[in-house]
Picture 1 (tube, protein in one colour):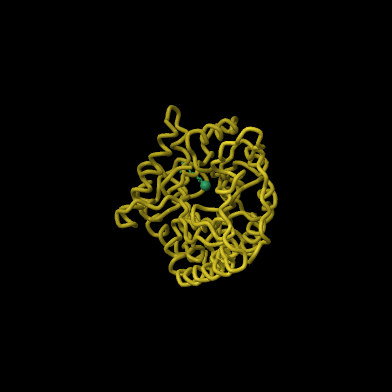
Picture 2: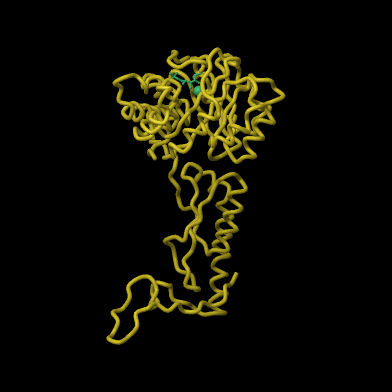
Length: 360
Ligand code: DX5
Ligand code: ZN
């Protein structure tokens, strides 16, 4: 996975349709972050492309996430098939029959996939307003949907990309703005400066003789430059996948705090970490949050964190009063860590000491 913030979704629309498995393998090897698959029905747009069966066919050919972009008039009719095909996210158009929009978004979310709405260049973002709470993705089209290789509509990007972030402000982590149409090394810095998360790149990658990997790296790097100098006061963006330690606590408290934090939409990873050993011989757990949400986590939970630390200190005192202090695993003979050399005739097979009864 690339460092930095921007991610490139490779559109296979202009790849060789007779050899999609090869196209997907090649793009993955060249550093694509994910795939963007343009589904067209000849009705919503004047072109025909792939169906769910094609997506199902390429699903086992790549480890990367697959985003489906449905340019079809009846998303609800086909949604189960696209979910079954193994799409990681499904984005369809807000211009379809309004009665279909909410049920389709709900079906996608119920399946545990990311749900998105796309807007054509002439559709105002306000069309998304009723669905805001159901959105993980807003896809801004910077060409008229239907074909690859068209020119980028700069004014549409300028009007909508930053504003689209606002539409996702209810999700502190994981929400994405995608830009689709005419994205390449000439336009990447501009859209990066408008805070876009995912750049859909199509036709330029499939030009004969083009170095696809270099093109992907350039687009990502230029988008991050744009972000750094236009939105981030010259500071490099926080890498999208970086996690930072937010607290270190004994297990039971760590689990409780993790639940509190996740309730607000910030994901937490709990790891037996590098912190102190508790009197029961077990290390504290590290609670990690995405670096991009660390400031928000502090704003929301700094006071709770102090309370948890105080509770941890009380728990440790109570444990010591009841059980005494137990040396850490790696300082007991026969456990992980340096083992003293065995004297002749002595068995070196580790014997697991019995643990004291688990305590709160
Ligand atoms: C157009 C599609 C795009 C297309 C982009 O309707 O939604 O995803 O593949 O291709 P380029 O990058 O050539 O504009
Ligand atoms: Zn697309």
